[in-house]
Image 1 (cartoon, one colour):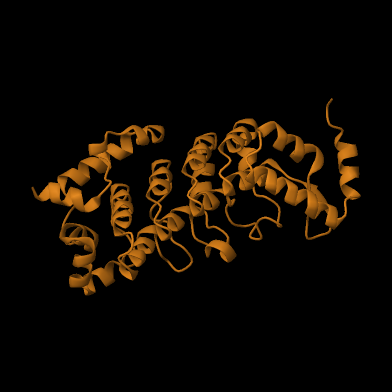
Image 2 (cartoon, one colour):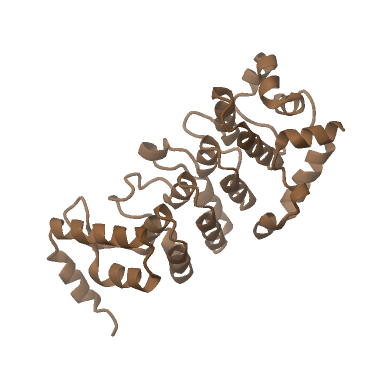
Length: 291
C-alpha cells in the first residue's frame, strides 16, 4: 500500500521528543546490529522519527540513514541507499546531524574518519552522476568547522593518514591544491603529520607518494620551511623526495611517467593496477630510481 504522506506528516506532528528519542535510538541500534535492509527501510519510512532543534519530529531521510550506515559499516544498507536514491543520499542532512549547512555534506569526511573504504568507493561511484562542476564542488568543499576544523576531504585523509581514502579521492578528481582557512594544502597537512612523530611513517610515505603522483606542480605552503631546514627534512623524507618538494630537482623519470599514467587511467581501474605500478612504499621507489 502506498504511503499517505499527508497522514505521515500528521502522525509526525504528534510525536513527542521522548518518543522520538526512543525510536531514534532503536533505529541506531538496528543499523549497528546490521539488520537486513528491508527491516531498516521499514523502520525508516514508517516508524522512526528524530527530534529537530526547532521542535519538529522528522523521519530519517536517505542521507541521514547513510550517515548511520557509514558509522556502523553497514555496507549492504549503504549500497541500497546509494543505488535507490543516488545523489539524494548524498544531500545535506538536517541541522541536528550537521550544524554547518554551508559546508560540504558530511558523508565524505565520516567515511574517511571511520576509514570506511568500501562505502567510500560506493560514494565515488555515485559522484559520477554529478556534473563536472558539481563533482568538483562536492569533493573540494570544506567540511564542518566544529568537527573537522573546516578541512576538505583530502586534508582530513592526510591528517588521519588514510592512503586508501586518499587515492580514491585523488583518482576521482579531488584537487590537491585546495587550501583550508589557514592556507594549508593537503600536502601541508601531511608534512605536519610527518614532522610531528615517526609513528606509522610507512603509511605517511605512501600518502606522500600518492600526492606527488597527482601534483605536477609542487605548490604548497611549507616549501620555504623545507628549504630552511634542509637537513631535518632530508632525514624525514629521503634525499630525492626532499629535493622534489623543495624544488631543487625535478621528479625522477619513473615518477613523471607515473604522473602521466595516473591521469590516463579511469578512476574505477585504480584498484586493478599491477602491484609494481602502485607507489605503496615511497622510499622503495626512491631506491629503485637510484638503482
